[in-house]
Length: 495
Image (cartoon, rainbow, N blue to C red; front, side, top):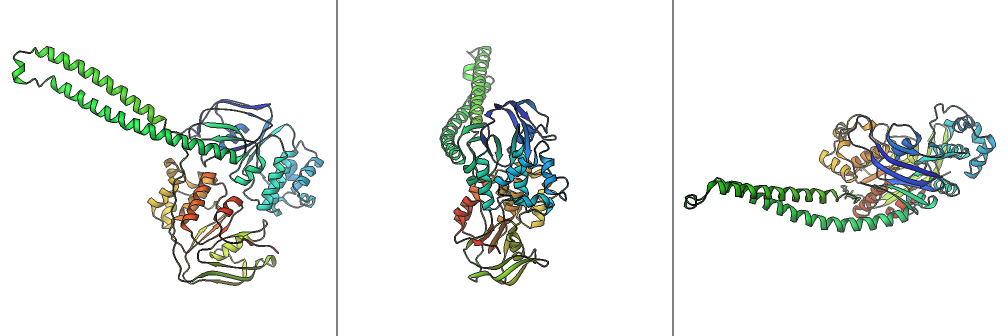
């Protein structure tokens, strides 16, 4: 059975820029498809169009019923069993439990309120409900954002044994483990290809090398044609001028009508030549289209006079009377790039919040160097509201630098005028990252900065961190990113 998209054209209401324009895609519904694209290229929009959420022009044919994940939970106070039954009304309880077992989710969570589950447990419960259904086509949008490293490995292995889904994820290792085909939404076209993330990246690099070489050739042609057009315009102007400025020595013997006719003919030919060359320039410019540019990012890395910036000794994360993690000890020295790791719910975010002064759950011996300037990226983005300009002004950042960083992370200029609350999750995270990069700091503290961030921007950030070598304390579940940027052993939290 095939999923077939024909001549798809879609523009969001109130926007003048199409998200998709005459797109054609054919894919087998048994493929484990990964959907890869920059933030803002329409990944989630495509899933919503397949689901039937938005009106569009063109045709979408799918022999199975597309179902979007994550399922919206209207009442999280309900028992998890009831939430799963709402997500999969056609499934029997034994089918739900079968999928829960494959995801190593204990049955006792069925009889707990859904709100009391960790975010990782909630993700697994909803995935179990999704795959317990028959005759549906799963549309899975960013399932890894709230999963720790172990949870990602488990879910990747689970999906690898399933047939037929369309998956949006920016975790490279996760994609490599569980997909066998790729849909790639590029700057000007769409690829459908066999393989995993590494296969896609190899093809992208080859395509970019070809496009760069071709574009250099086109730019040379454009410069030559523009120079030729300039000379033709000068010739045309001279011909028109000659119509009225016949030298006195010639005017007595030459018919001025003849001179005018000849000038008019030259004018017509030169204008025709000019139009042809200008058209050739525009045609060649239109071919400079499909290279994925990864711009350079910058940060201002301050040097603190002390070698040791933070010391945490035998501390604990305590919520009220409940201790969720104890025995926390580590040091952050100048130049370190360290990652806090551990299962969901062990207090990683609470540690970071306490260090930046936004929480008090970390109790124990915590020493922070005097005068330490910290640049902070929180995990959540729901506080972002209002205009981008107002946010930049409140942050005290340089507006030109802030927007240049966003442009290098593939922010289009029209997004600068869009309210922050209307931006995608990936775009909001880029706003937070741009604010952090604009802030001169001794220490950068980032809490899951890559959630919803596209693979191109992840590569940009990796390159920036390796080149600038800032002192960094980070919570992140992208194993490939941590392997590429961290300098020491991971700091693992847990009881």
